[in-house]
Length: 169
Image 1: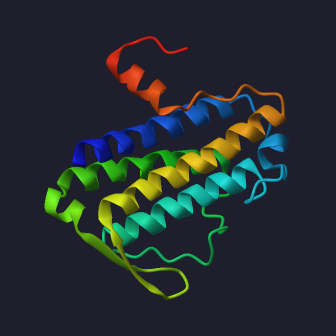
Image 2: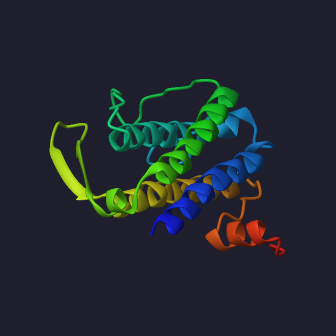
């Protein structure tokens, strides 16, 4: 399981980098426009992804990260948000790499933002973190195409092919 989690952590970084390359031509107006996403805009959704990554990482690292809400704006500047999100996504690989198989097979105990205590399987909860990010990157991809820009191809298989040197579409 550790190998798969390391792969997903590397995919997590790659997918954010790929998404940001696709966002380069997007105008500031489109980037900040309410386009019907749960967190309204591309910017709002990216901020949510940073919030989520930091909150979940704090739970795994046993260093809770406090926020006012899942929609809290951590970075108002587009470029600073990109740097923060891409830099933070690297932490997962380092954390997973340091864990024993026993730790990854054990439960993680954490308190959610409402104060409720949970115990969930560590590895499965890590899968949730990566799946959650994929969900929102997909929403952003839809928004990109809504505005007439080309969405990135973020399928896991494209990442795997890029790592093996195989051509991607």
